[in-house]
Image: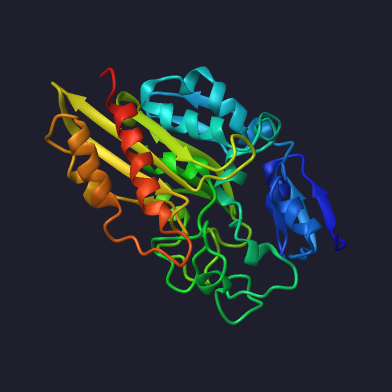
Length: 327
């Protein structure tokens, strides 16, 4: 591991003051420490915010929204009473499926949303790639790409690794960002670039900015949601495809719907047209299959990942069934 300076902060003001000149925030460090140990990255200074749970942790609810602090662990999200409703089931299930029980008790929501892609070319020392900034091209496009993107790849076919991101997209969440002395809120989808171009990082935060919390509006908390994924191992693995769904059903008819796919694109992939095709119709397997075909109609498989199209449709149908069941 390359040498670095570690600043352990006691409050947010100290954290803001310390994160300058290329410094990077560290919470649990599940992803960050791995990258440092692999010597794929060299960071001169880390700013440890892991002790700021009073400001950055916890799950609370008020008249406007549910607030999830950026330091809230995935275990807390999966088990907390404030995420127990059917409307938030997608988030609870996504958090509960991640990694292992041990990792979920340490890994934070903020880290899960902002982690780097798990592309083996990006993370392998001695192999240059365009996204890592040390190579001329995307090695996965013509190489070993069975886990890579079928949407939005352009010149980089990495996939976004966050379980929770997919669920938060369909829940219409907002990200609260600390920038200097001010804070702002942005739609959760704006936390990631519109296209996964090789030159762009995994997220849109500027240097020194800090993800404070994620908010989910009370209007969303009245609906129904579900999350499903497929993966090769039962534990400690990333999905090969995933899907999150949020629906509002009234008098046996779908009145509102959102769909997002995971592990198929460089960013969480919204399927707005497929979601619109559900509205005004009663739930049925035929409707779900039609929506799944619409969601994947523009997919472009690489050499080794065509299986993701059929698998992804099955995962989405399963999520739709779960979200619409027992309503």
